Image (cartoon, rainbow, N blue to C red; front, side, top):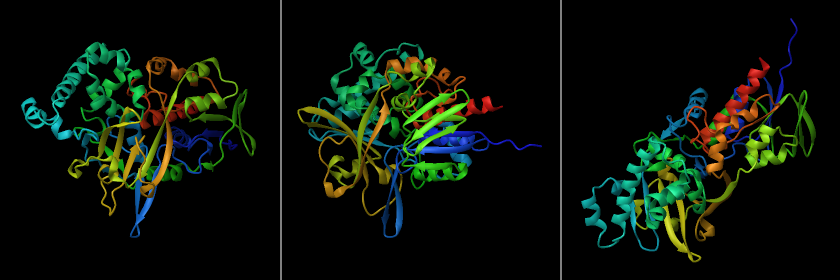
Length: 433
């Protein structure tokens, strides 16, 4: 019998969406992965440091996951034999100006204990504590009754929530979960924010009622296993500059020339995909246009100045607030030793958008990451976005797609990106059948 030549598929981008697409296509196609960066992985970005001959993997972007809200990603880890490590949970809020510190344990106290502990030193905090309680009770009811279909800012205005509650609690949790600048939190769909807390608990990423986990050795471990299992032609440091759909294939252009493939998966951010795709269909154009991205600076360092003053309050997630440049600045510092649950001679931190300079001698590396701005417009287009991949030679994938399994409020996460890559691969496989 004649041997059929496997189709050639280009995967542009090697973040979770691209790795997922390549992995799901590995048995039916010859795969070439184009990656503009010198390393694969996207937000699975681990910096490996050495202490006394021992390598420690320090994650700087994607760090935690759980089986309930990352089901396909966890199944992937199971298939690859990826080691996972239980995350101990816990968070601290701290104000570098006032000295206020509270966290996981304090939110579980009753009102009388809160009054006794804080009324004299921080008289405004008991009120914030009561608003936290009210928010989680009311928002769950509103979400269940379909009364949260509005922006977060509008929802908080309707509920009469104070500025102190917004800046001493909610804005910092949201900034950590979605890596979104503080000023954009108010544009987020209230339903998306509330759904996260409903599915987890009041502690968000630091919640203790969820089996949060990290990747043993850092997320680079899963990237390496995925590439070994897939075996693609990996072309790092070679960004695609144009992608064109043709009647019988796809032309992918890089600095080294143009190569033709049977299919391509554009596993990039939406704005990058829109710039690369020369002839999008109407559905693709509608899916990509108008999606905004925010940029965050992440610094990996050993400087404790952006941590709570009381070392006993150093938990996995440390949400800070400070006046800087005439404004209130919110930030988050991840204490990696605790978050990734390892022991080391040094304390390692990751600070998202530091509000003031970090000791240059303590900086290990810094990165700029971009994330989709999850606003009402992005949530609304989720009802039609998957249709952009019907009958096209170029399939789109990225975290701006929602997880079909978990619904339209699961946007912007590693699971959303991984699921989008798998769905794009499934479309290709269906068309090859």
